[in-house]
Image (cartoon, rainbow, N blue to C red; front, side, top):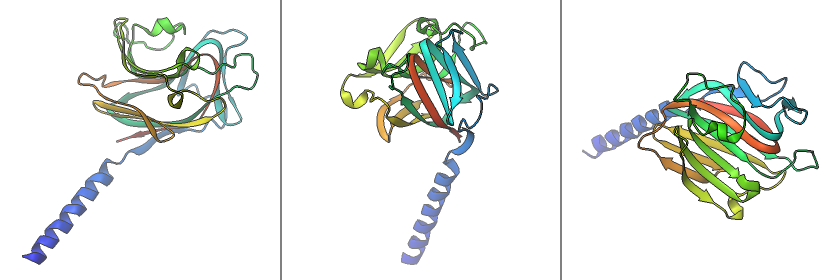
Length: 227
């Protein structure tokens, strides 16, 4: 009986390990921004003025704007995925340098239109969308908020921080990981969990975007994993 029990336990753990391996996310997309911005994968919403630009420099995607900009990843994401990237808010005396608005959209869709991309980039023009939003260091680095946009203009705050540990430091590179597992989503910054939330009425598919307002950001090592 003892040998039989030991064998049963052994095969049970092998089964659990197999399931764990089978569910491990696999790399689905990667962009290290080694050359020019690939517009087959990215769509930029910004005003075409002198001080606004999204470009590649030193192997990084640069978002430099005097007002607002959103850079959308053009592949729709569904159900379960993980996104990782490195992001820095640059403060080196540039014309647009401001320590603020390290923002993200995900699972974004427009309930009134099949076309999501191409709107004017003022922040209020996104109020009608369905999406999740995180703004680290918003309001000139005084708040960090997690919201759910309801598609009606209502933007429900799910969690908010105002302490220094959850705000931005100038010229510091942050490694971020955003996870979406059906109803549960989590956001990590340098392996520290900032937000987690289980939504009983989740947005099951949509688009991911980098967002900012009047600032200069660098983004690198963008990866998407899917199960």
